[in-house]
Amino acid sequence: MGTLTIEFQPNKKLSKNGLRKAHWRESQPLIKALRKSIAEDAYVLGLVEQWETPAKCTVAVRQYYCGRAYDWDGLATLTGPVIDGLVDAGVIPVDDGPDYVVSYSMTAERVDHRHESKVSVTVTPVSE
Image (cartoon, rainbow, N blue to C red; front, side, top):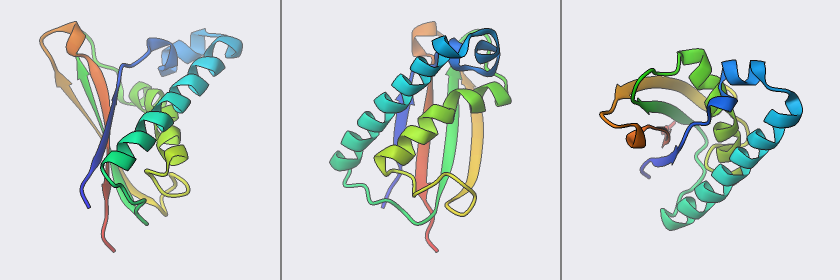
């Protein structure tokens, strides 16, 4: 079994600093919409790739940025709803706790143009 990668455009309102400035009535619908969108995309991609939910996996988050990169805690906050969407779609096992997701990693790569900015989340099964 290979890997499954989901890419999305980051919303600054869902970063740590953005959430701190926003009222929950503004941020919660954004979080729910992102989680639902990722779950739907991951479900369809999983069907195409014939993905089977692994017992354990690793998660790699990679940000492609132009200008200023998100700091690590901001990137982690930003990808929280994405990880939950992957759990909802069955890409990641039952929960994203340490019993199922054995490691997380975050990397950053500068791109030349703003339209290339994105965040990708890659799930890789771990054989036991």
